[in-house]
Image 1: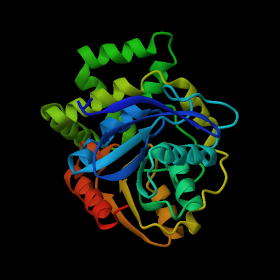
Image 2 (image 1 turned 45 degrees about the vertical axis):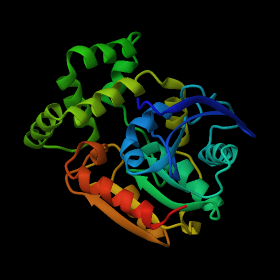
Image 3 (image 1 turned 90 degrees about the horizontal axis):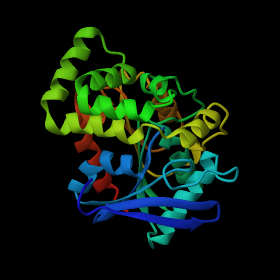
Amino acid sequence: MADDVRLGTVVDTPAGPMQYLEVGSGSPVLFVHGSPGGCDAGELMTRFLVAAGFWVICPSRPGYLDTPLTDDNATPAVQGQMQLAVMDSLGIDRFAVVCWSGGGPSSYRLAADHPDRVAALVPIAALSGRHTIPRSFSGHILERRYGKWIIDEMVRHSGKSLIKATLAEEGSFDKSQLKTLVDEIWADDDKRAFVLDLAAIIAGRRPGLENDVAQFPVMDDLGLGSITAPVLLVHGTIDSDVAPEHSDRAAQQLRNVERHDIEGGSHIGPWTGPGEVEAQAHIVEFLRAHPA
């Protein structure tokens, strides 16, 4: 974790406490993590934004880390209001929103409900409608009694196998594509650390994930048609976790939208390749073109 991370803060909101961390300085960006996740996953996934000169605020959605899950804050709409309350607590009037995967529903709802507050929106492989979360390799392991311990041991002793298993469940690779990408990630210090750190971070976060599993198949309309902020949709073309059709649907409903499709990219393609450099550069360029 970066040396300048400020974390451990919990803000009281009308729907209960919400934990967040913040890092960097500059134009403010709210980053909303996926399923599972937490503010620490947000910090990991936004280092390229901090390096580009943004002030990033990463909340933990309800059920993750130190944000309690209750009957009052289970839905994406309410979680969006809680995320807004975090920005209110920091005195931030306008800000960009970047979200990944299961962070999409609350982010879309926030942008729809508060067009005066959201300057730009970047959904990365984000859910734009109802979705059933598939059972994954890591999910099978985490159902076991010592699941978190198993993941941690794999990070320490079988890292390349864990990277291969992670990529296999995040993208529809053929054997040759998978081997090539695993070898590339294993040989790159930053990419290797990213995948292993992400696997270790999200292991064992059951309450929030179980709520997402329950909410996403039945959630209400996310209000995409009423979003006025400029939107950049980023999605890997072989994402097998959140299908590219989610960005297709969003593109049809949004008013002011552009796309960045990552050819051959998986669910974590913007960080692991192929094409991650171009994807990150486009996100940074887009946010700079639409400052808060």
